[in-house]
Image (spheres, rainbow over the protein chains, first blue to last red):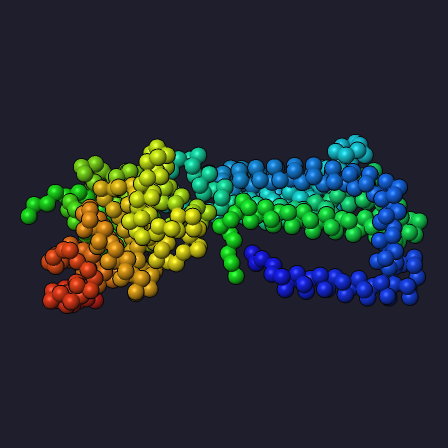
Length: 254
Length: 256
Ligand SMILES: Nc1ncnc2c1ncn2[C@@H]1O[C@H](COP(=O)(O)OP(=O)(O)OP(=O)(O)O)[C@@H](O)[C@H]1O
Ligand SMILES: [Mg+2]
C-alpha cells in the first residue's frame, strides 16, 4: 500500500476546497428546496447540535454500527478461518455464503425485521452485521485457503506443531486480507446501518435524513449525510493505521 | 578410503500422477561422513523431489532412504534444509526467522538467543537482526535461510539449489562463504545444483543425474584439495577436465 506524501495531501485538500467553493457560489442560484450552500449546512449543523438531536442520533447510529461490525468481524474471521482450513466446514458453508452474498442484502432487511419481531436495536445490529460479514468472511477464507505452500513445507521441515502452524503461518498470512475485508465491511456496514434505520423503526442518522427531507430542510438533511461519510472515512483510516501496526512487514517504501 | 556412509539412497522410486510421471526409479547413491555431495542434473529431473524424500517431507513409492541407520519417515532434528525459494516468513524479522527452528525444537530462550546471534554473525548479517526479509537483497535473504539451517547445528545439511536464483557475483560470494563455513566445521552436506562450476567448487564428489526418470549417470570425485576458494578451484588444472566431463555427461542423450 502506498503511503500518502505531503504533495498528495495538498492536492486532496485543494480538491475539497475547490468543490466547496464552487458549491457555495452556485447554490444560491437554485431552489433552496433542492440544494443549499455549504455555509447553510454548516449553520444547520450547529442548530442540530444545539437541540441535542444530532448527538442523540449519532449515539444511536454508532451503537448499532459498532455492535454490528463487532459481530461481523468475529463471525467473519472465525467462519472464514474454519472454512479456509477445513474442507468439511467449507462445503457446509459455501452454498449459504454464495446464496446470501448474491442476494442484494437490502432485500433481506424486511425479513430480519420480521424475524426479530421488534423495531429495537437487535434487528438493526443484525442488518449491519449481515451487510458487513461477507467481505470479511470471504477474504479470510481465501487467505487461509491460499496459504503459501512453500512456507507450509518449510514449517513441516522444521517439525512445526499444529499450534505453531497457526501462530507462525496461518494467522500472520491472513491478517492483511482480514483487514482489507474489514475495510470493505465498514463501507457495507454503513449502508446496512442507514437502510436498517430507514426500514426498521426510523432512528439515528437515517431518521434525521428522512425527517428533514419531509419538512424540506435540505440544509439539515445534509448534516447526517456528511457525518455518515465522515464516519466511513475515519473508520477506514483507522483500519489502515492499524494495518501498519499489526502488519509492519507490509510497509514497503515506494 | 572407507568413509562411513551417513545417507544411503537405496533403490528409491518416486512416481507422480498415478504412475504417469516417473520422477526417478531404482535410484541409488550414498553420502559419506563429512563430505559435500553435489547432485548435478538437468532442470526438472527430480532433484528437489529427491531432497524432499531425504528429509522425509514426501514418501517414496519404492525403496528407502536411510540416514545413520534409520529409515527416513519424517523430518529429523539433526538434518536441516536450505530451500531453493529461501522459504523465509515475510512477517518474521531476520532474528525470528533464524530462531524459528530452534524455538520449534524446544531450546531454552537463552540458547535460542545465543545461537541465533552466533549464526547471524557467521553468515555476516549482524546489524540486520530487526530487518524484514523484503528489506534484504536476495543474497542476504538466502544468508538468513542458511543461518536458520546452520543454527540447528545439524549433522547433515540438505541444500536445494540455494544460490540458483542469485546473480553470478552474489552467488560466488556465497559459495566462498559456504566453503569457509565448511572449512571451519566440516559437516555432511548434500548440495543440489544444475551449475557445473558450482558442483566442482563445492563438492567432494559429484553425482550426475540423467533427465527424467533420473538415474545416476556417473559419480565423479573432485580431487581438488581444501581449503578452497571458488577462484582457486577455477584456476586449478583439474577444473577444466572435470567441467568437460560433467558437460559431456549432461549433454549425452542416454537411451534409458
Ligand atoms: N507434487 C507433485 N505432483 C506432481 N508432479 C510433481 C510434484 N512435484 C514435482 N513434480 C514433478 O516432478 C518433476 C521433478 O520435479 P523437481 O521439482 O524435483 O525437479 P528439479 O530437478 O528440482 O527441478 P529444478 O531444477 O527446476 O528445481 C517435475 O516434472 C515436476 O513437475
Ligand atoms: Mg528443484
